[in-house]
Amino acid sequence: MKNVLTGLACFTGMIAGIFAYMFIYARKKNVVHHSFSVRKDDRSNKELSVFFISDIHRRKIDGQLMNNVKSFGKIDIVIVGGDLAEGGVPLSRIDRNVKKLSQLAPLFFIWGNNDREVGELEIRRIIEKHGGIILENSDAIIDSHPLWGICGTDDPSSGNVDIDAALKNAESFDYLIVATHTPSLFRKVEMACNPDLMVAGHMHGGQIRFGKFALHPLGQFSEVDGKARLISNGYGTSLVPLRFGAAPESHVITIKY
Image 1 (cartoon, rainbow, N blue to C red):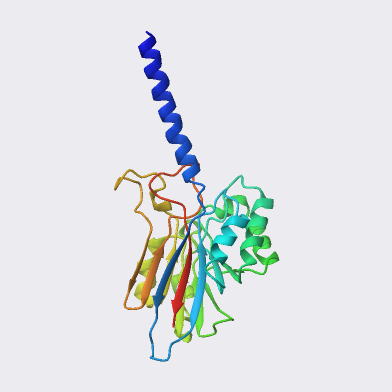
Image 2: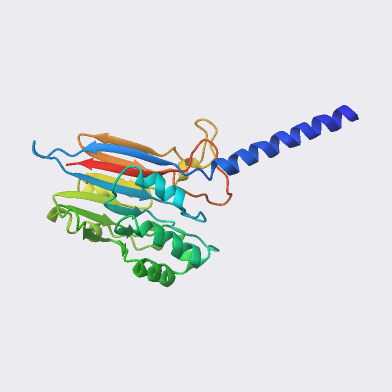
């Protein structure tokens, strides 16, 4: 009986240790750096620096993350790629998160499938309060790099996705970034135009994965002939505050052009 109890205690301790590891792992403050070149002529010597973060959900943006981002140098724009929040997240936390992110650079926001759970008007007020721009089937010029435009779509969960409206001015920009919450829209975007950079999140890299086994693919950055795609693992968690095999991440993307 004593051996059984000892074995049970060891097993319980091992399970508790695994959950503790997954809980701590989910709170890492990783900033991954990517760099690529868009070469349209031999005189290209400028750089656009983008900070992309998606799927914050319940997490807090703190000074350590901001310092990690700043270690890569000046940021030109911040893109919040949806799921800034979810139901039950205090508005005060959302406000603080947006405030910190907007202090890095001009902020662009696109809707995720969970954001409206806290109230659409409330999210709009917070983004507007901190000078951000909501891209919902629309575009904007990047003021500090006026050859660049950024387009964003609403999330499919809204039933309001309009790719044509989002890209209606795409040809007026020399260079283009397209942001969608879900990468499932990438194919539709590419049927209409050929952006220099596309970014998305939503799938959390599977969040809890055992090798190749997970609900969704691991996030990745890929670049071919000066055109890049980024699918992020996201920064926060959904359903359970745990991760395994799919580290939380945010991204600094340096584009030479």
